[in-house]
Image 1 (spheres, rainbow, N blue to C red):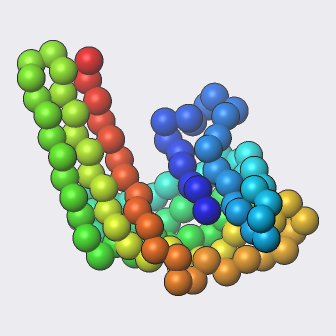
Image 2 (cartoon, helix red, strand yellow; image 1 turned 180 degrees about the horizontal axis):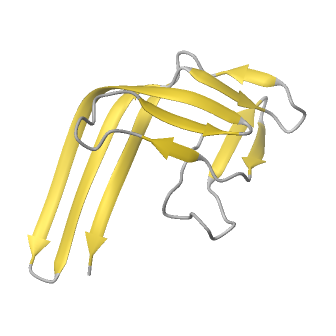
Length: 109
């Protein structure tokens, strides 16, 4: 499972995909990402026509760089992805038990 968003919003390009039975299936929909920037360990929601996930973080990692004109702040959360995704054929696949990460990166250069 690969879910992404926000940085591709409005471009009609996505990085979303589902790998089932040896076949990679493109999820072309832009997904809605909802999360609390004041509490990164609260559940995140990722949703679309073919995806319904509540990401449940259990660890947060923060990386920062600030050298004047160039700066970066990345928050990466590791957690569980209970929810579902639909294949190209419309079959619903459970994502319960899937562990991974979600992140937000802000860059200035």
